[in-house]
Image 1 (cartoon, rainbow, N blue to C red):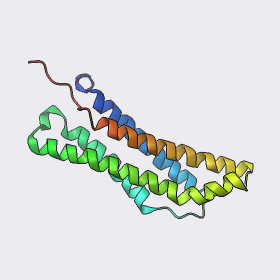
Image 2 (image 1 turned 45 degrees about the vertical axis):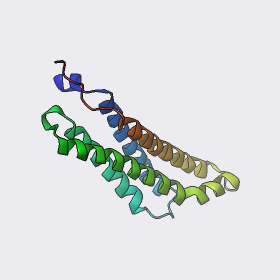
Image 3 (image 1 turned 90 degrees about the vertical axis):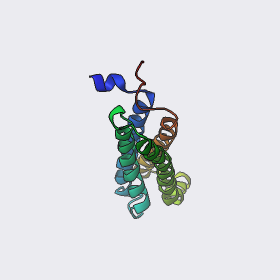
Length: 150
């Protein structure tokens, strides 16, 4: 319990960002196996970018714990913040770009129950990935642990 008491706002926002990235990645896989979007191949950049970003969030949380705090770990944690946000932005952009033409055709022409349900998984996935990106940017402004009182 003392571990949770030592954590600051940045820790919780980072955890929320990681959860949102996982949800976005799950919906990416779900959407890739639907009838409407099943013909679009899985993009390695979206998958690798999201997985590496989630791993870097975990690394940042570990590096900013009081027992590991030194100048090198602080620098690596700062680099992790930047790389995480960039990877999530790229993953979100590629997710959108791969599906924009099909989304436009569903909205314009092929509005049936199946394609509308498939479109919903795109919207949820993109929203989760975009939320993860924004939360990772917000988390980069805050520390992971509270400062000890002197």
